[in-house]
Image 1 (cartoon, rainbow, N blue to C red):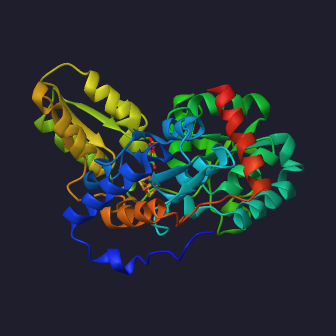
Image 2: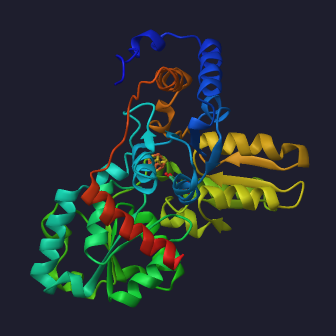
Length: 366
Ligand code: 13P
Ligand code: SF4
């Protein structure tokens, strides 16, 4: 039985240097019992403590492969849920700060998706025969379970084209949530005309669409977006290209359609890092994704004469990813080292089984 938890109040005012010291000491005490999975967007002062790092797809694979008793996820809530779903029952997934959600993931919820499905039924008959529900991995576990139950699938920013291909092979239409931009860009790369990809506004009756629009659409794009990536504008690219005509532009597919269209390369965080690292020395890059990743990448490649610049003149950090700080990490690990589990993320078994099904379909396809 666990003794009482050390309150976070005692860590809130901890100086960074002490927090780092205590993180290292707790990690050493826990040894192989703990693994820190750290997303590319994590701040530098947390990233330095990583055991493993990657994009959402890579981290989800790692969560299913690691042996540690405690998987401490330095990322956002849906990522820790995926770790819980994919790890063995005796393993424990932990999110150091429960306020680290993903604002885009929160733009879709089960009640709204189920209502949308009923509204589609009213127009199309049985959507289970005509519409494949596809959820971006940036979504709550119950939405992944919804997809599992309705013949749908999960995708990530690395495998979206293959997943959409599979989805269209099952049924003629796709309901894609929660990120309209990833859905639209991927559909576009597959040759689907923009007018056949309509925005489904879950706050309006029938998504704000007429029955004709719904019947004619190939993709119904949930009206959701990432607050960080929507800051990037085509004018940022145009201005930069004027000053750097020989440079390259690379963006994450959560960016607006026009930004992806004007970029030379579009792909996941892992893809962005690989393309820039593999590029020729002395090349110049404008990068449209979260600032922590861009700053780190710029440092890592500058010895090769590569110049990496951030796309927006404004600071665009993922404020929820930022919630994981050395103080929360020290609090989490010290409690674990003392035999107390804090901030465990648990997905109910029936939901986890269905969510796993939609994720297994994804892995089989990609
Ligand atoms: P990646 O899967 O590319 O790491 O993206 C996750 C994410 O949240 C991007 O905003
Ligand atoms: Fe969510 Fe956007 Fe943050 Fe990614 S960058 S975790 S999509 S809010």
